[in-house]
Image (tube, rainbow, N blue to C red; front, side, top):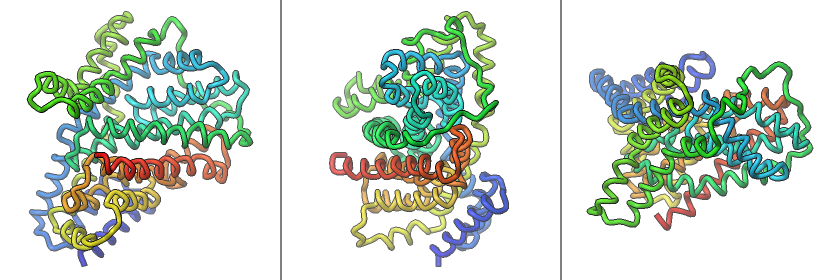
Length: 438
């Protein structure tokens, strides 16, 4: 009966979001309350569970996403993202533009949310395709694949970071394992798959772009731009590696665990960017602080949605549903990583939103962690991979890709939807391969 209530709750969540167009955050809270009461919890206990779920999930996450948004906005608004793109293309040459766009999407996508990175890079995709005389999708799909992988696999992006908090996973290790999976995934879903699409001839939509183009004098240097964008990744990845090779009592390990903590790494990155992209470029402190302040508006609803996902997770745990899930999987031969991926993938196909699918899937799959002893970091990546499965008409990203590349509906499914599916399946294969070594 408990699982039937959860299934009914998920169906109601779909109905509220897809049919009645109710705000996702409100829908998550309403469904969390409804499931808790239907499971027999006292009303006060349900409210306490919802509040605990929101608070526990958002805790340090507010700092991570806040600092991440600040860094991403400064990289964008100072022209650093554009400099990175042009610099990589010049270094790779026109004959290797696919690989240049792969690296561009990866470097720009690390500090920036998917939608922001996509909109910033699309005008550059158009100019590269025109100058190299290649189809738009040939260079655009590798860029989109890189952005998608960083969005679904790698902290400090909202989905994987929030899921890592839920599973009490080490965020630095999650980033390290995610980077290992990201390389082959991007290569297969980007350049290799993109080479099959040379027959898709499209032209840029007229009058679509108003994105600012920076002059050479306005942009910071290439080295400074790349370094600033990569500071948080370098700090977190270094801390993860050192934690694997040095004993817990090592002073060096303690230092790097401090500065490599996601909150500290992003705070340091924001302070570094303030100088490298702001004050050293002649901007006043007031201008830099305004860019930081403006960036927070863009993540307000994302934070609420993540909090709502945390509330639903906590209700599922406190109501005893987790015990039922554990009982069902006892004796099964299926990998818990595969089960977590499958649950999330089904939610992604139904819900559309990768973040909501990931958070909801994490709440349902959480009992698998305690009952099987699987690596929490790999569980985060399995769920993150599942959250990217087969994007279609209920995903805003699907329509954004369709309109910017001027594709028909069948063409978008044959390109974008298949690319997202490749990313998802490659992520699953990657965590299954890594499992024996972690």
